[in-house]
Image (tube, rainbow, N blue to C red):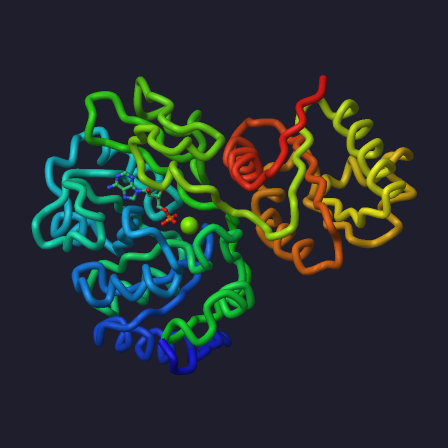
Length: 357
Ligand code: AMP
Ligand code: MG
């Protein structure tokens, strides 16, 4: 952990060589951050308890928050999971490789530290050639939570990983910015009716096309102390910039009115404001005076939730580094498709939520 972190930059033809070097580190029980289609993951051999412990240590991750195990083919699923229901195979055919994590009964080969002692294991097949190549070459399933310090916004570029974890991990593969930008959807397949534990890259409507009934098992806020949660990760605050974050949600014109009102009030009190806003909000007359001042990050169109998802965490990190006292975030995107995941992350990151109509 006190050694330097190697940075492997993918530049076209060298990817095979880099994957071989990185796979060697995984086989030797080390940690490698790598791009997936969702966010950058911090990987270690999922079947090697010593290696998995290094992930928790590097991230400062609570020891009761289990990891997602990444696989490159269905044979690896059979190594780690049992009692996989038929409906799960339909979902795999539809969404793997891709941003859907499914929870199954685990086999004994999976060490306790990977699942935090649960009798279930979370599994997904990432849709990224570097990630798949690394898992294949390492010849073992790779446990990989997001490659950030626990609680901070997830990393969507190698620079984000380096800023959080340099010196704490063995290597990072820089494969450029990720595509999806928010984490995978987590679906518990062990009950008769699957339970959605985290909204993510695959939307609930997409899942409902294959599964008759889905129970919503998450809330958009961190659970209170002592509250019983189905997925340990639901307990923790997440994605938070260090700067205070105020989220304004509701219909778009009311959101614009409220954001401009807040920006004016803060300005009057000499409180420096950062704006995390959609293109449409930024383009209104009300916002013109504030948008020209800097400390603004454009999320993309409010009607393009995928674009917003891919910009969200970079925006939180960017504004966190600007010299501002408060970040006002625009929650005017809908919850359709990946919008549900975007609003879930924003609500979990927010210190204050203002709903307007
Ligand atoms: P991360 O790897 O940081 O994206 O978080 C993985 C998420 O999946 C967390 O919310 C975990 O609590 C959840 N998770 C992982 N394994 C299990 C499991 N066996 N049962 C329930 N939730 C899980
Ligand atoms: Mg995470």
